[in-house]
Image (cartoon, rainbow, N blue to C red; front, side, top):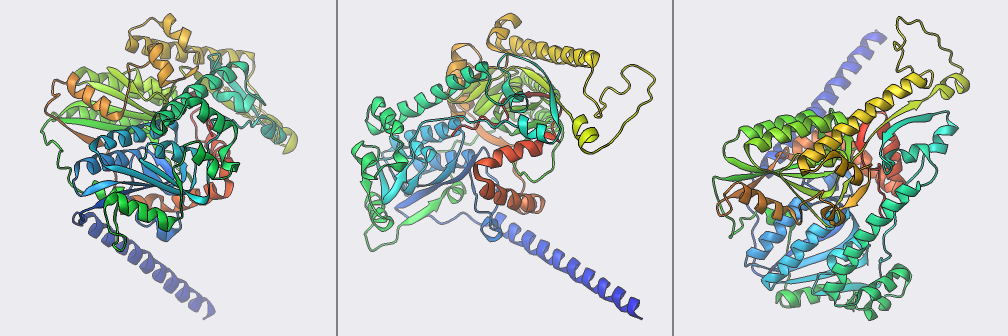
Length: 590
């Protein structure tokens, strides 16, 4: 009888849980359907575009209206959505200006530079940009420096300190648990393996990091100096003083900030700019809502320029785990590019790449797909924050390459990394192994021992063949010899500004510049419109797939802070392809 009641109770509990899950899914899908079919938001006269500079800047927007409910406080700011909103704000007469609200902004330099250029272009309309923050991070201030007026809380701070790169080294940590990395690479500057083989930067790596940091920082200083009408020497002096620890009036006297006010006073200034009475409520519209409105100056055409986004680590197949960061999945990209090739309405393709590389095999497959696509219609490359190593492998297949001055690119090199856990298994855990084999290499990938001399030589030869193929791909794409490319390759990382001088990119510019070039190459410069690919999944489908991981990642990021990237690197080692075309795992620019 007792067993009967237990079974009945278990069945009832299971049934109740199932009903609860289905009801939850039903509500989510219903709300999502309503949201996706909603009409355009209303727009009042004297409205202001409100851009909150808080969170992680990503390439593409993903709908996620349940973030607040689930406690995901680390939001994202999409470059494509922000650029679209700024462009529409320039053209819609009801929008009188932009309110930038500073916060904890995390971004690569090139994405910041692209958004900042859009803000500079917006000011040509004669509309205002006003900015306020309790505290400015350096990234947020770089964007806000373009504003007509910059306000800071009287007890707030502005973080202006220059740039530093501080890679984390895992060699001694791995040694403590009995693991040693066996590395095979080509390229004097191929430093992606250094965190696992060294305890400090090699001289070659220090040289390249110093060069690209100085290049990026000089762009920051030059841009801010031009907008704020101050000298570059003054900005360098302020960085040396570490402004975050200075009294708030110090950056005011240096003309980095215009005024010190509390938030209520800042709102009154904003109302004055928008010509709204003090006792009236100002109408703020978000980037997401503004993107739902029609652009009065948009041109409709049957001729389409496809803008295909490829962002994240390059992998052979989708990798599951706690991270929700985007991935470039080789076989999916190949299928997508074939679809774009077969679509007769698409006259040219802009491939927007933001990747530090990954699987060398997947990079080669996508290189082939891009070359086949370019035979039928022009493929123009637009580089985002990074288009390095495997990211550059993809890029060199394009007909023309456009990069931001601060894009990290190049890193032309290959490496293989294999863990030797024999000490952990045999000495620390006490495991013993034996083997019977038919041929000399039958137990090649035997994790109970390190590679022997013959095996190591074979692997090094394999890596060198991969590097030579990489050189050939780049040489063919850039119309140079392999010897010429080898002289600027060797795994070295360059900024877009440096890459232009050595012939790895064709032009410094934005995504819009790349789209215009694609239209010109396709012979449709006066009659085209762009369309983004791949199309984002509905937010409710995305939430069902990733919300658990998204919440966990958000909590880990908040808990670990600066150590989050190191944790993520270790977590990713297990799922990475052993042969990689990759930039250093994390440039860690601060």
